[in-house]
Image 1: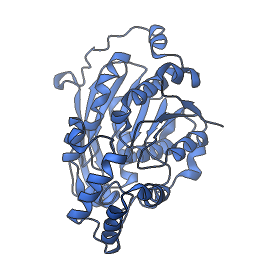
Image 2 (image 1 turned 45 degrees about the vertical axis):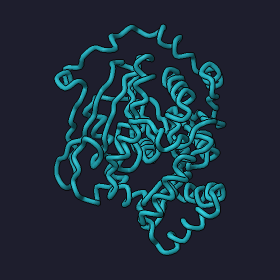
Image 3 (image 1 turned 90 degrees about the vertical axis):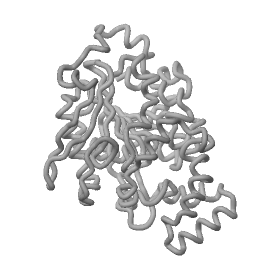
Image 4 (image 1 turned 120 degrees about the vertical axis):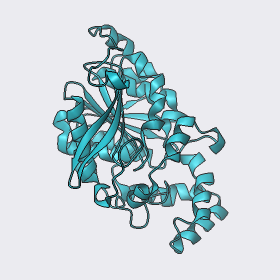
Length: 343
C-alpha cells in the first residue's frame, strides 16, 4: 500500500495521515496524573537498572521513565552503536506537554549501562533480545508500547519488529534506511559528489591506504561532512545534549559495528551487509518512517520504506539532516506526536 506522508506543518500532518490532532486526541482520553509516581522507580526518580541475561552472565542496563500514561509509552533506541540516551533529551520539550510517557535507555555497553568486554554481545541478535528483556521488565505491551529507533536504533527497531511486533502498538524508524549497502552507495556517490573536491581527494587517499582511523581523516570528516549531513549547525553551535552524548561514545563498539565515522559503513564493520528491504512487507504494526533532506542517508529510501510496510506513514523533514530532532525540530516532534496520538 502507498505510504501516507506527514507534511511539515502539524495540522497538515495530522490531516494527511488521517490522524486527529494531538489536542483533540488528549481531550477524548481518560484523564491521568502524568506525574504520578511508579513504586518500582519512585526511589530513584524514574531510573531503573534492568538485569539482562546473556551467555556471559547477567549485566544491567539503565532506563529512566518520564511521565505516566497507560496507553502511550515510548521506548527510545539511541544510535551509534555505542552512543547513549542523552541526545534524545530534546524530547523533554515536546512529550510531557502531550502527556506521552517515555523511557530513556542506554543499551548495554553505552552510557550509564554496564560495559562488559565481550564483542559477541555487540550484535543485532543480542540487542533484539535485550530490548525484549527491557520491555518485559518495564511492563510494556501491545496496548501501549511504541518503539522509536534512531539511526542504528532504527536498525534495531526494524529487527525487533520483525521478531516481536506482536508486542508493539506502534513503530517509529527515524533517519535510517532498510539497507546498509544502499546507505554506503548514497554516501559515496550522491553526498561525496557534493563535497569540496580537494577535501574529497584527501579522504579518498586515506581510504585507499586503509587509514580510516587516521586523526586527519576523521578531522576532515567531522569538520566538513558532519555540519552538512549529521547536524546542520556549525560544530561550535551543536546542542549540549548532542555534544555530551557523542563525547562519551563507546568508540570500540562503534568501530566494530559501524566503522570509524558516519561517512558510510566501511572496513570490516559488522553492519556493512545488513539489508532488510525484502522483509519490510512482514511488518504489520502501524509504522512511521522519518527522513530528512540533508541526511547521511537517502530520504527517498525512507519514504519507500513507509510504502513497503503494511501500515506505513512517512514524515519528511525538509530542513533536517541525520539529527533532524534538532535541525528540523518542530517538524520532527510535531510529526512524531501526531503519529503517536493517532494510534
